[in-house]
Length: 279
Image (tube, rainbow, N blue to C red; front, top):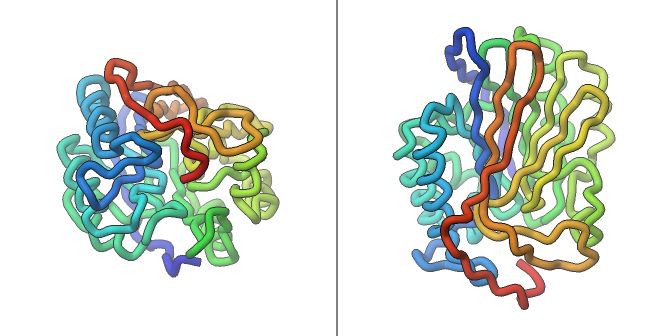
């Protein structure tokens, strides 16, 4: 594992008589260099466009979930840039690492206003549990015993009526042949825990740079476009998609339902090099 240990701290956000409004922003892949590009796309530029869109449409959000691959190169400068850029929203930000991240640098650089290292967040009838699925030096993910034990205790001790579990790697196949082997290695163990809990209503992740929205029984499983480059769905080999950068809005209702939509940044033209065969 990366060496990350679950924080005992819990973040509580007061919400009265309305759904909790959450923004998921994932996989920005920020570089040390100001003009650093992923597949030809300047990732700082696309992140700025996403943040401006959130500011104009969803400044009333209660929480932002940053679900990994914040950096492309694990540089201190990339994390400092992300923290500075997000602070203009003046909204609480909770985060988890992805396979491109350095969790220790994240913890150091995100020790700033509006950022929280809490991995359990309480919002009215809901609790959000954040899990670290990143493995040092690997693209695929694994929760491992400590993370699964953290989740097991959270499921057993929660006081909220409903739970949303969040991680970076995809725990189900998405019919994308090159990406599916790079998902969560111990997904069966994860679902054994989630399926045994009557409170779990959602499972949210990043990593796949595309939309996913399916149900597993009562659990709505969701993945979100990257704020940078998208991956082509249903592809056999690595391929970038033509879709624009995006983010997800979620409303967590008092009835246990998740209302959600994806917002794309289509008013700005982004140039992506589709000839690149990897990232």
